[in-house]
Image (cartoon, rainbow, N blue to C red):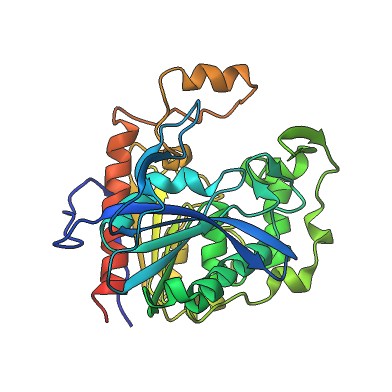
Length: 355
């Protein structure tokens, strides 16, 4: 059993040594069949690029800065680890492009879906706790990439990882083997009235990019069997979990039984990390768990860098969360640099170096 490596409030000290070769980054958008949902998933793929492609800014909009890549470039020759990405509640996968491009430069193929029911403009409290749908989405991506003739010769099927943020972190927890307890989650929301619990009680949702009124969610009315089932996919060999949701609801024994590396990262210093996502205890339970926290960061620091005028635009649209605001004197770009280093270190160590 490997000892827990606790890296509290680390600064940017891990050098980027991912590869002697830094690839250009290609990007593609594709549809992937999700049989359990009965629909197609919109998926973005970042990958080490060969020749061709046209420059594009991925995830660029009026609020957030985009990330350069080459759309429809050829795929570099070789076999690469696959990293599945799962976005946070109410976000989109292209909001993780700042990190995905750095992974692709280092020789990873990175793919993530927009999860129906919990993505920007299509997000409801009733869909939020259905983590089994998110894990099914991620497993559908593995099915596609390992069967598709274009990708099956590129992906090393023995080196598949998952990386999730917030609700995506909860999905990554579950596909790695963690199981949640519905009664524990409901009890937590009985007394905790912020974050996910406030969302369930708020009576608001987004459908077709419009705000709508909905009933409050009674967590105890959720399908208990589905909520507590195992969603493990044994093809996943490593997990990176950034501010993972449902932190108070996981079954201790399920964490103790996970046999793959679980790399937990919290955004913030000790004493500032919200109860909803604090992960040091989870890391301590996982046999191959590591833990790090990023000083001067907040939960929203994981989102892309904001453009000048972005905060004012958000305020004019009625956004109440300080999406563009970080905790200390560091820039979001600097926080992203540290996060990138931590993630690359974890994935190199567990998907590249161990094989």
